[in-house]
Amino acid sequence: MQRVFVGLLAGAVPSRVLVVARAILDFSYYAQLRMHTAESLDGLESALAVFHANKDILQELEVREHFNIPKLHQISHFVKSITLFGSTDGFNTELPERLHIVFAKDAYRASNKRDYEEQMALWLQRQEAVFLRSSYFDWLSERSQSATASSHTDPNRRNDLDSDSDAEIEEFAAPTNAIPSSPTASSPTDVVRILAKHPPHPRQSVDRLITAHGATMFLPALKSFMREHMPHNNIIPGPHDRFDVYRQVIIVTPPNPRTSDSPKWWRIRATPEVQPGPASQKPWSPARFDMALISDGARTTNLRTLEGVRVAQVHIIFTLPRQFLVGTNSRALAYVEWFTPLREPDPSSGLRQVSRSTRQLHRNAAVIHLDEMVRPCHLIPKMGPSVDPGWTSANVYETAHDFYFNTFIDLETFCISTRSY
Image 1 (tube, rainbow, N blue to C red):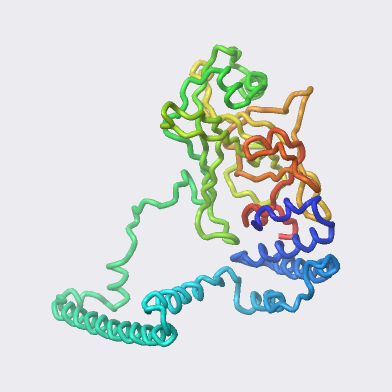
Image 2: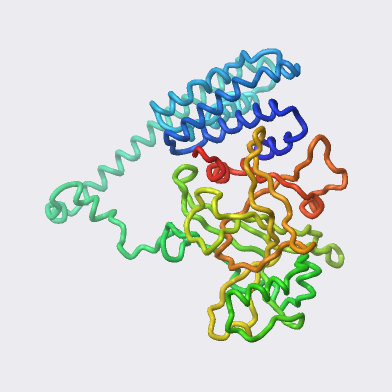
């Protein structure tokens, strides 16, 4: 819920309520970082100060009677705690939640549900005794195996080693020809884009792309792309050409030490609506044309800020037919429909607004290289005090005109959207 909370409140509540909601969410996201800088700690402290400066609006609107809440006092110590002991990404409620299952739920289920407190205490005492005895037997077993192994060790081999550390190096050194586990192509710091080995929808007609994918400006956009990037090609694309089309692209980005220690796998889909097959063997599936951040050139590194990127909706992921590739390398392409550049953040919600971009009364579309696609993003329609009853998840991106760029969809988006980060 926190991912869309601010976008849903924008325009539906007083501006000070929006400021309070934004501030506490800013604090929550800053606190989740795995690595902090002076700027991020300042952002953490500033978010909390803004919350306390505006929280009285909730009392004025009779949402709350007081703020004597232990957790609100606890978060006032976060900055000092992070400075002294490190980031809070390892703190969670999973451990006590698990203990509640073991000490309460399992113990209650083992009782006969009458006078269960005494039975639960006795059951836990017996479980602890069994655990201690099992641990003792395990220790004895390991000790016995260790003594047996040492008695069969070759004394000559032992004397050849200079020290115990030499033995560890000889037995556990990693092979020099190990295959890296990362799926990256050239460097673990590169962004990689992965397509299916074979196109799921080969030889799709232009008419099919226009009707099923909604790519009404496909041919004009493709002609413009070829004039710019393939000026020596004399073949003009037309309605008779056919294109190999892909359902999605996977974008693998290297780990961002501030948010995660593992690579991120982003999926950007461009799939039309699937009608149910005969005898309901194939279920109905809505169209999925995902939003993405597009850079102004090929990009192989992680995105750090929102500078130089623009929001677009991806309608087709495809490759050119062979007749267009004479003397050129085949690179996957995408047909996208642009949104306007990101505006300045709203003073209350802090969200940036975008709208559909048009040109000569048509949607502003383009064909781009796939390696200009940076990562997916999320837009929330601007709803105001009431929601259009005609909006559905299947048509809202087509019927709404103004949208908020969702800063809170994930921690990485929050980081690149926050100027003070």
